Image (cartoon, rainbow, N blue to C red; front, top):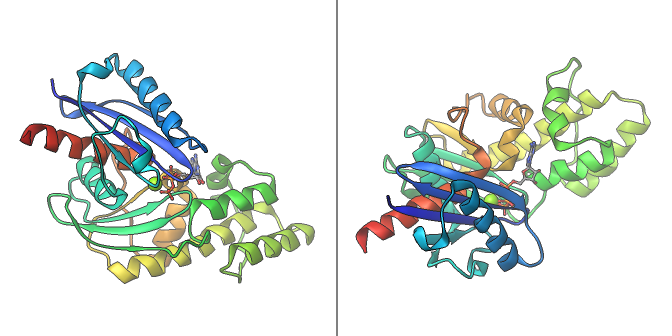
Length: 263
Ligand SMILES: Nc1ncnc2c1ncn2[C@@H]1O[C@H](COP(=O)(O)OP(=O)(O)OP(=O)(O)O)[C@@H](O)[C@H]1O
Ligand SMILES: [Mg+2]
């Protein structure tokens, strides 16, 4: 069996996937740290252990993400744009537009029928429209990230959050809390504010169906609902067993398989 690995060192979370026999054998997600090389090694070893494989059995390892050059045991590193495109296409063959919302960046990637990168757009290093925005707001609201979706789908009209800038939006949220506005209304407003940002980025590339969403923020169903709402377009879901946060690492492992085959 050809075994390969993909390691995605993101700005916020680090992900490792062990791939073999045309399937994901294991995956691990952990927080990124100030020592990316050490984090990469730790999650890789944990993923190997879960898969019941030894390092010597892995033919090729590809690194990707923000810290892709800091994966000491990787044979090469590839941009996360290509990896997200490739991973998303593997998880859902009909995917042509991939929206990746990570901790620090939001990217829109268009791919061809084989999952190869055609075009992309990226946000300009601004927290609004990324996972960081919701993390900041959760701190202000005293909520956990995994509580946002439930809040989103409870009763109440969304608040209008006027400020696109996350620093100003934070003050706006503090005011709303102090005025006694119910949290679900604020959360819905925040999701719509993030969705407006994301929607304008999507429009820069254009939507070729199917449109899928990857990255940790894709675990928040409230965000997906808000984006569909803003785009007036339904996003296609990955099969339920696919974790959208490991798509970049999966793509890296697939690219590693290609390179092992051509060697
Ligand atoms: N269960 C969850 N519900 C909602 N959001 C979540 C959940 N788990 C993680 N997130 C969000 O996912 C983000 C991390 O996602 P991801 O791992 O895709 O980012 P990254 O790859 O480190 O970032 P980037 O691609 O920008 O460098 C966090 O900022 C967090 O807001
Ligand atoms: Mg990422």
